[in-house]
Image (cartoon, rainbow, N blue to C red; front, side, top):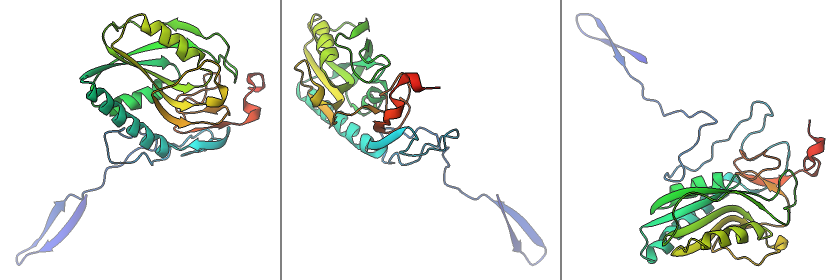
Length: 240
């Protein structure tokens, strides 16, 4: 509040005039995503480690910054919306593979312009290691009716193809009108089971990555970027 003194012939008079300020955001506030023109440029500061923005003491190298993820996920959502609209669809059913795809799926959903139903399936393939097991474990197959629906299966990363191939076969039993796959990352060097996703965010080299939902032993999912984990942090037995 600012006080301005104005002088009149008879006596001075005080007027209290409000001062307009730009809105302030907390450093850890979640920026509107993606229905905004404001880029997600604000750093995320970690009071314990001192890390902020696209950095973390356990990360060896950042592969995809939060800005790159923001732009690519927006592009994918626009493409998906247009493709299904071209089929005459007004609604799609998105099924995300928990836990890894939850961050990606949440941002993707906010960019899709069609009516959207949402469900999850829970699958385990890495457990607490850095290499996927040969036979993934499906813990939850979802609950929505899929017959005659346009279904989009969303996962964080396509590597061996074992998990997505198993899930695809499970979903096809319900006879959806269409069944497509959307992945944020495609690690082609690790492919064991032939599998091609219709929508891919980024190709990624054969390195172990974390962040933006991807984890190691349920850690690092909250990082706003994707990076390679330092080798010394890839052994769970070395953790305190």
